[in-house]
Image (cartoon, rainbow, N blue to C red; front, side, top):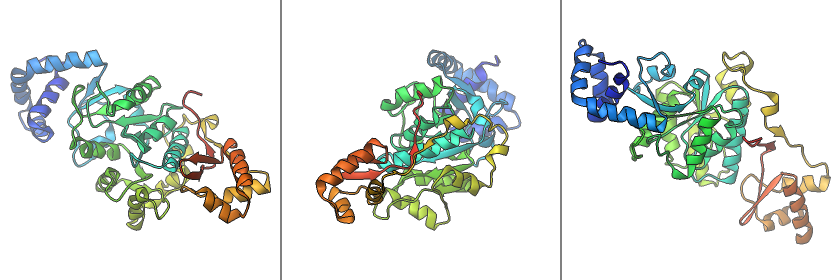
Length: 359
């Protein structure tokens, strides 16, 4: 049998009989006979799959290959085959997953971006699922160094969601990675995403949940991480926020409470300066600290703006100043990058400046 057909034949086996049956065939005593049988049954489909992969610039890797991601060899339900675009060697670096709500808050996006920028600047890979909200914010922030990998719940020919196809292309162009265990043309199915989540956690040293509702899919990723022996961490949020309930539940159950990337590395017991393969970080890639306002009046006003949406009436009641003066000073704070005006009020920005990946 021709060697190039082996991954494609395996893909056809997985599609026809499921990955568990494929694993049985691969590990049985007479594996050569199984491959010979597969060649007779699936040769035409395998050749079509190879052609599709060539057209979409997608490659395949099996556990038999040295470049197969080592962490995935040891999870309870390993993939029998992976499709990928981009730099697979990136997964030889240590990685941290950042996951969270699709309908996240402004603060959630900012926190996810800050964490991802700091993690990638230390030479670690940021893993996520390319979903809207927290996932996309983490990928975009990590793109400055290209240290990000997106694990998809569908085929790589049509990344889901469609709104993130440009982001997926940019991940590949900037040295990142797109990964899936589904053929390039596969449409995402509801059951794909829980399956995908085990790969996100399996590739990572830790899973950090930024925002998650009580029934968020991110909690599935956290549960799978625990089953795989990975660390689970969560970012706390306002007690009244529905998208923080899942995070608070995780913290109550023993997840490490995380505010900064330094908290993540400390919880892992890792000195990032001594981490093998983590030397790509650059000081100029770190998010730059934003100092507190030098004007005492602006500092007082800033203290009245919370991390959750704060209305103008609430701010005025706290500082005891006329509306016109409060609005004028809020405009100064917004120009300085300290607050963000949103529908219904203002929110305090994290004291970090998230660099653009295009800078």
